[in-house]
Image (cartoon, rainbow, N blue to C red; front, side):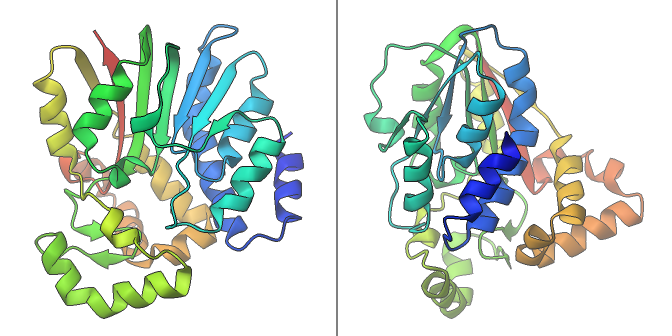
Length: 270
């Protein structure tokens, strides 16, 4: 089924389709195990489903579950619109709105967002809002860059102290990158969320619990070795990660989880 979807998407001749396919494959690898544990007719929501490719893959793979996505389709990633429409034309249920405008009485068994959390204006409000949509035994899975590590993955540049100083130093590069890739507004959309801040927020909220899954770093390093397109986009972090792996430093690196460059958080309601 996945191969059929991939072939159909490639035939659309959409710019950056290979990148979005690779992102969907990564998401499928991370999310499908949760879907396997959901009862028949269980409900799954993807927040910020982007191209809709991952949602399409999961819907085909788990036909006993009910999938839904929301995606506001802002101007930042223009190439997503055609792919998103392809997903909707394939009977994938997607509403093109942000989470703030999503009014639902449905309770979901799984809510996930992949590389979206770093773009929401107020991630604390996002967590409080989305957690209300969970079933009693439901789970939120968040995968996103951790800005506690001094690296900005969308632009592939080091973070110099904070967002504003980094922009001042790399201003010309950032503006040129956005223009060349058709992602104007990307820098402004980033909230520079740190894992440490999220963990402290969850700890202070008695209605939530959190699991910090540091094994995501193993998946990311494997992706850097297998996905040439991803490695090309992430040259700096690829060099660091492969050095850490080659020299047996990964176990030591994991002793400082708040500094890992990527995070996977599982959040449940109590």
